[in-house]
Image (cartoon, each protein chain N blue to C red):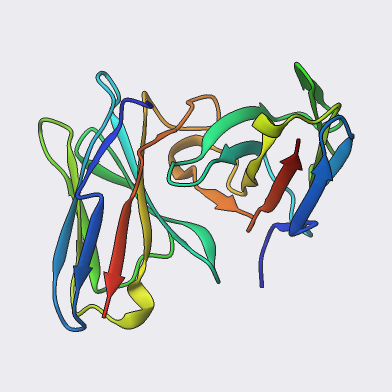
Length: 114
Length: 114
């Protein structure tokens, strides 16, 4: 059983469209992160959210952390081919500190077609 | 380029064998993390070292072990290899530990067990 469920698993859209991907759990996370991974490379951190209800924006990307800190969403406006990649969410169940461990979802594979 | 280096890039070996994966963290980073990424399990945290000492443990098998040396590079040893150990192995590094310390991932080592 995955602690973090991401949906959809695959998403193929045209350039210029908007999209939202989701990360859900039945567990409460003390912090949650979003990463993008491109083929042949390691994940790259996009954002960290720590407060329930928090919204962060990174250019065309908007990240939201649920009020109960159990879920998160990533919204991309006017998607571009450069946004193509595997989007991973990852959370810490253990209140950070010395026992900080990231639990990853399986990801959403996004393809933006020109 | 994240600044984290991993060698080798690819490794092909047989069941029952033992291999060592190597990671050099970014200059100045004291924490090293090891992750395993497979199609069925996704990205899973294995173990973390901070300044030479084990800090956190995840889903690491008893056949696997790791260490961090005084120069801060780290090695992941995988023994009695099984077909199911075929995966991408990532190393990441950060300055400290916790959600406010961004983890920078290396390019990974692709292990194939035949």
